Image 1 (cartoon, rainbow, N blue to C red):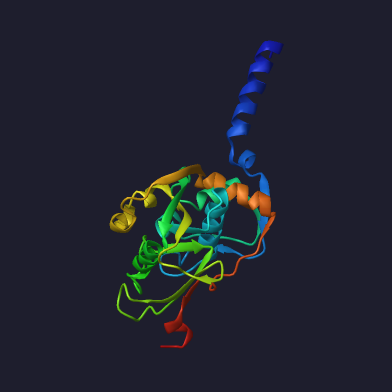
Image 2 (tube, one colour):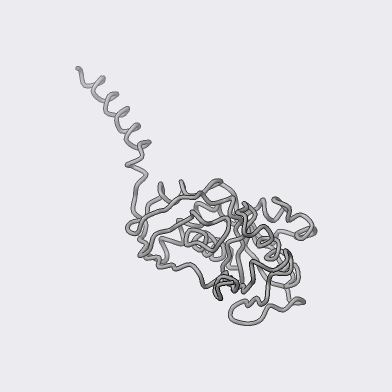
Length: 223
């Protein structure tokens, strides 16, 4: 093989190497606990917590809502995190995160809708960040929430909150159109895969335990 052919062969080999999964497996952070998305459609989960935290951080919002339909029912084990694992856990990794302003009343209505299908799983179930919801899954649909706090303070129905949501949710997907009608996007952020990557890289180590954001009082009391 002459020098010219050898150079072409080397260039082709490097091109395939760059496109291979191993080249994409750069470690960007770690997680102390598994990132579990298997119950994303019916309960708070650590994968949902991560996606919501990343969305909120990406656009500097007060709260974040991420529909379960954006998350795959997979488990990323504790240990190193790379782009491939994080991106493959998202159904629409290239969807943009947007910032909207929403009243506390509409925010509560959206949270109620997210809980309305329980105990049946639903892609419209909402994973959250920046807030805590105490509810009873055995109560009548759309009357399940007992308390919502944002940043440790009771939700004010008349206050305007800055919320991070995937772009499709802001447009009213999954039946949220009546609640989110009239919302204006104040800022368009990165793709959700980039938001998650940036968040993990900034944190260095993730340590999430589900059960503190969406608290089902029916289960807590065994009823």
